[in-house]
Length: 107
Image 1 (cartoon, helix red, strand yellow):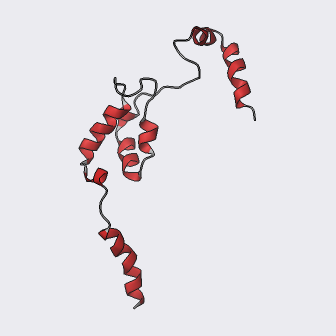
Image 2 (cartoon, helix red, strand yellow):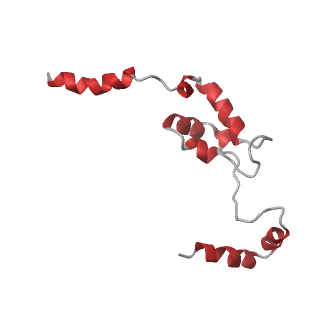
Image 3 (cartoon, rainbow, N blue to C red):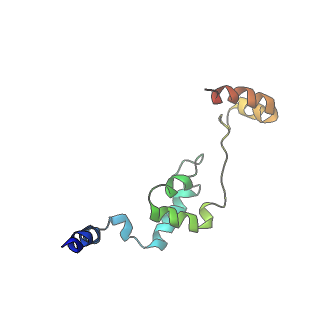
């Protein structure tokens, strides 16, 4: 009788419906993820979504990590707006950049 109770949880997992997103073939899902994670006119050009995609579920993480195109480029955001004139002057003067960002790092 105890064997029946042990097998029930594994049986119930097998009977649960598969999520529609998991029915998509991995090749198509990788194409969608690649399109989402690369710069294009639909996605905000200031953001890359590789980190977000890899945090959705274990399947997406496995696919994202196994596909180098998603990780071949990354951007480091140091704050500020690249179109802002102060942003450019901060890049020319590292001490000013530190002075403006360091107070935000304090508790």
